[in-house]
Length: 242
Image 1 (cartoon, helix red, strand yellow):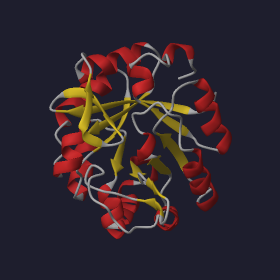
Image 2 (cartoon, one colour):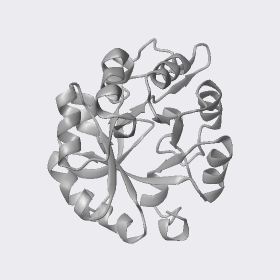
Image 3 (cartoon, rainbow, N blue to C red):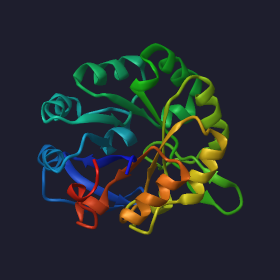
């Protein structure tokens, strides 16, 4: 398997949690502290960690900065985000040890500003997250603020805009499948691959098993973010090529 795997740790109030379909009222908490869980993934062969500050995503204030150098010291490359607003926020995360900074809500609200960050920090330093919720009448919708506020932004249009600005890494979560173990949103990734075949696309949401990983890889995804399937034992990193 050439697919890059990104074990995910979502943090709320200092705890490892998973939200079902992005709903803050449907939270599952796990016993281990974020650093302990990350070290477990590193011991199982993980090279990367996808770290999400859920409080920051909703409130606009990234709060996990002290954790980043400790994760780097554990041998993990970290892509992380949540609530970033200024170029100085990106710089602080990179200085603290993040390998890539994930920008979500601001990429939808102010794509020009984020495009300028791609030019400033380089294509490998940023991941744009275009997380989408299916709408039977209007196609893929792109909510912001921790998936709590609706927008009218175009999924394919924004992806093409960032590709033209030099973006290399695009992450997209099918929100309707996030935390459900119902299988990935393959239609979402087919649409994005057709719109922007040159981007390194990361699939996220609903991935259950090795067959799901093979399915997203067959579409042409470069990576997969794994959350509940690892936390609850459906997948084991040690059995996969990490």
